[in-house]
Amino acid sequence: MADGGLTVLDGSRLSAVDPCLPETDEPFTGTQVLEIAESQIASSLFGLSLPENLKLDALKRINVDIESFLDTKLDREQASSKLKDYVIAIASELKDDPLVVAILDGSPLKLFLEDEDDFAMLAENLFTDLDTQDTGKIRANQIRNALVRMGVEMGVPSFSVFPRLEDILKEYKAEGEESLGQAQFAQLLQNVLQGLVDALAEKHVVVIQNIKVINGSKLKKLMADEKKLDDEIGKIFQDQCASGEGRASTEIIRSYLEKNGPNLGLPPSEANEAVSLLYDQVFADVGGKNIKKLDKDEFGGIVKDILEKFAEQLEANPVFHDLDG
Image (cartoon, rainbow, N blue to C red; front, side):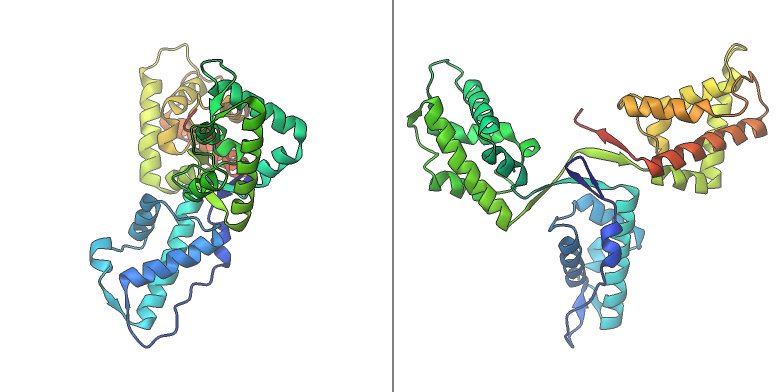
């Protein structure tokens, strides 16, 4: 699934993966099984190396103790079973908590380079930002800072995730102390970016974004767990009992969810305007919204109805919460 230039990895791509072991008569170790699985998973996820916490959560999901499993000897049948279980567990983890990634393939940079006006404006803005002394000159090695300023948002990977950038700077002599005017800087930047476009076309870079996707999956888990759901309803009901006579039950429920929603699988109420609209939409169509006091069963029914509406809306239209914002 893609959204606004970003790609959401929600496990659906792994449904086509048919995990298989290499042909051998030798037993497999747990380490080998995980390496085989992660290689096959990566090939379906644009070459992405999954975060360690996600992999550990997937292993917990299939009741694997990582420390003892790594050196465990497995026959082919056992290894094949664990391999498939692990891939399914990774897919389930991604379904519950999707990753948002930027796939850097050089396309945005190519568009800049093909549009003379856009590129000229970009080069001018970067030069102005880097010419902090307002001398009309900057050093050639400031190209590095220009690339950092452009960043993933403009299709430039960091040096740490794409070391080949260092080679590109060397190739175009963008590491020295030579002073450059704006026109010279623009020409050097153009050469470096073209080299980067060519390099990214050969080998894409996948960068995980610090964006949380709330798609109703966590909320559905809560609703499927009767004890946890009843406990949560009890907490909200206590708020009603403690409130004065002037507040409607739905007002109390909304206040509680806005405060505690992220723990239940709802997006933070202050995340963005879309979340405010989501709350308004859900609560606009709730029965009994003007009733001041309800008994616990009636109150619980309204809470469940509200949570079901949230789950439906989030499944249909997931909320993207920028954790850096």
